[in-house]
Image (cartoon, rainbow, N blue to C red):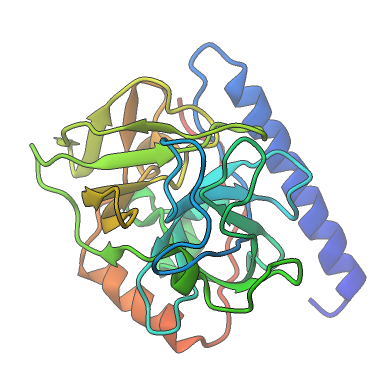
Length: 280
């Protein structure tokens, strides 16, 4: 946009609207997931300070719209990359370039054991940008450490990172940690078996409500490193699901690896649309 003030006004309005939708959804009977934007912080490939809660995962964290003051509205995971500055979440969690969102890996009862990291750019599939195709409901975000962090090191050097894989196979077990809309909490975590709903990877486990959008599905999760291989993120069909007991993901195909390569190259950021309401 030509006006910085106008851009800020539009961004703020979009964030406020999405946060309202998320909280409303969270209080509904189905507690369907609707999302919004966020930013990040870090720890070491060997971890700096372990979370006190065993459910916290160093490579998974809460996404906040613009700072750690408002409720977090989505979840994201750290992706292994050459510069150690990439996270992945659902595309319906991000509006515009994503700049200014905050990611807090290992978020635990209001604490940031691995620091906080600010989003600088977003990279999404063309099918999401032009038509919000649910099969392309994923986005890569670049992050940099906040000035309050004790280290200026890249995110991945603090938390470790997950390899990027393709969609999980039916019957494969995944570990999924996600944060419900709010703050001062710990993630819900489950290790279910995957099945398919049409082309969409799916799993059944209670508790995945608004805010868990973007939660990575990790295959081969190792608690000692807090990492494995991300093969999906909560999103896709009905923006991740209309019931807290069943979750979906967009199918990860070879196209997602091409998108990651574009994010790593660090060209101009994409501009993502305000997501349409889920059709629950």
